[in-house]
Amino acid sequence: MTMSSDRTYDVALEHFRKLLQEQVERSDRIGKQAEWLDYSKLDKLVIGIIGGDGIGPIIAKETKRVLEQALSDRIRSGKVEIREITGLTIENRIRQMKPLPDEILAEIRKCNVLLKGPTTTPEEGSGMPNIESANIAIRKTFDLFANVRPVKIPSQGIDWIFFRENTEGEYVLGGKGLMVTPDVAIDFKVITRPGAERIIRLAFEHARKTGRKKVTVVTKANVIKKTDGLFLETAKDVAKDFPEIKWDGWYVDVFTAKLIDEKRRREFEVVVLPNLYGDIVTDEAAELQGGVGTAGSANIGTSFGMFEAIHGSAPRMITEGRGQFADPLSLMRAAVMLLEHVGMLDESRKLAMALDICGIYDQKAKITGRSDGATASQFGDYVISTLSDPRLDAKWGSYQKN
Ligand code: IPM
Ligand code: MG
Image 1 (cartoon, protein in one colour):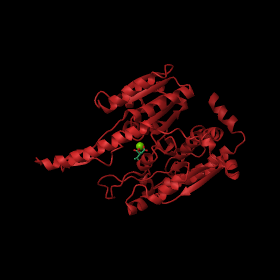
Image 2 (spheres, helix red, strand yellow):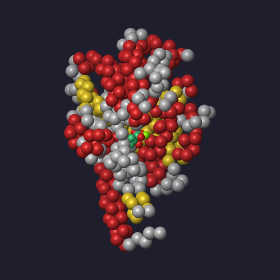
Image 3 (cartoon, helix red, strand yellow):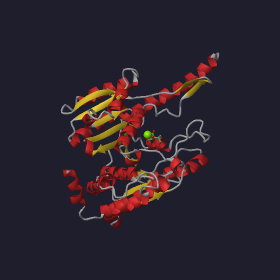
Image 4 (cartoon, protein in one colour):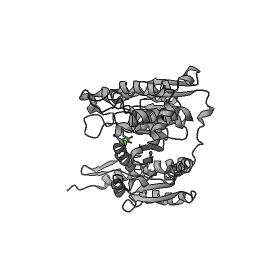
């Protein structure tokens, strides 16, 4: 047993006091949030693209080619620029001991939206220095509070869209936990009322805009009473402004089980949930769709957006020499979300159709992650030729009837 002195507690309390202060200030700032940026008012849209680590540069390269095809007219007329940003690698971040080196942040700030390949996040005890995740750093820097993750399996009637809170929960102080004594570790979870409200409202607004009938709120409010309790209470309040939309509350454990219940799971439509549950549940949902390699993700704030795959950098694929067989569908689907977010709806719709054909219906270049499947670059070629086919609409339509 460790005997702790008053000094131990004083240090911990001082640490805690600072954290409390920062969080109350952050909550006040959310309350005074700016208006949403109107991308259609920009003279030129600059899309930054970052390769990242592991399989990142491989899937980013293919996605860039596809995006250049999707936006060829706008690029030619100077309305869109796709700008590559290099250097967001684990080696460079470790060298500078920063999750997001200054010169890269400066380049990101010059863009209006960002398409980002996965970046490696070292874990405690991995032998690498314990720097914060680049993702989390970008999400925090630009206050990208909504992590939107669609999962669709048409043959099973599944069409889900997850709204994961992206800046609070267990993550906001993820790097600021404390070893109180060598035997006692503490981390913190924070939910603020304005932070919960903005993500829940966005989920309900999405349901209203897209004609969906139900929003599901996932917490563990029976056990995590204060933070999840506040999230659920906020949902009850927000729901009053959307009387035409039904809502229900689920605990995350049974919700996770119901996602694999074939009879029940079609009932879910829009799902909103705190950060860590959202992280876990969306990987599960993506796996049902065909693997995490198939799912895209939007990180949205009022004045910036970052679009990425939902998965990590898959270092194992690189060490096993399978990098070229990585699935670029995840990042390409993120590109669809990017186009939709900036209001390029026709381009977004077409790319989505091409990806449905290549990734779900036709699958003429099937990715398996191994040498028995297509390479990322073969898949890229396939998407580009599908996208440039004048019969794209009709082809996609023919699958909807079956
Ligand atoms: C994700 C990832 C990240 C997260 C990691 C890389 C920090 O798992 O985007 O889901 O946990 O948010
Ligand atoms: Mg995750």
